Image (cartoon, rainbow, N blue to C red):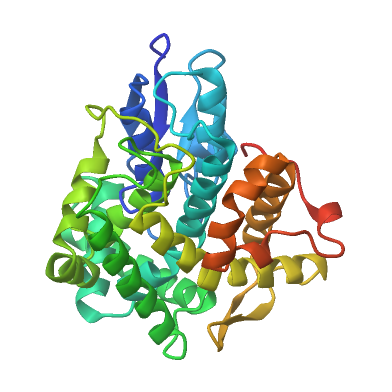
Length: 361
């Protein structure tokens, strides 16, 4: 490895890979972006027989640290670890602890909810199914004959269709999924008429979390078409966030009213994402991980499966909220209450004991 140079192994259709690459670019941290060709062939585990598997990882992004050669996954804890390793160097965490917590809610809501509408659009519409399966396998395989690409795309599509159903991409859930994308576009298009970033004139972890997901919405046929028609500012913002290394700026003062975008995204978090995460946490506490669950969201029963990682993300948010000092809590409580986030941020019976240590995988 080159001294002080991170190695980031990512995938062509991985929003979390693009999220982490964007953070490295913005923070001016030397790195190499690597798509390990052949690490995925449409089925089975990611990385079989490759560096990813040798590192004991099964998903991207995977980052290799330059000082000790260690490999790590899970984008949010990696971002926090980079903050510790490079303090004061173009941080993506707002300096005010209350503001930083609001940014964290938006980032986690982006990470956990936005893949669901994207997955449903990507693997439901005929045009998307054809394009996305071929696009991603072309990215993973590199230069291969048409027969090999076509077979891999066919295998991959079948795999993703099954996952779409498991994650809640059904006709019953579709109106809710698609309406949240429409709301996001509307809120961000209005926001981007006044400022570029959510918590000031510089991007925060919330912006990077949102960007990671939208990096895929801006490429996939149906979601890209909708964004270009209804939210051209947002489409261009995605291009900016791909490489914000030239952006300088300041955080908004803690007493400044929240931006239009922050208000809109917190509302989506409080009304949609956090209720889903709470249903996963309830299942986790009850020992029903990976079982079917129903989350009550805006008067609808959203059917999906209980994923323990989603439970963990909410439990970590609750722990972070509990750790805030009184002044910070009081300062952000109106925004949390107005958005609907506040009721989801207190530990319920049995949750504190089920909260795992926070850190990289």
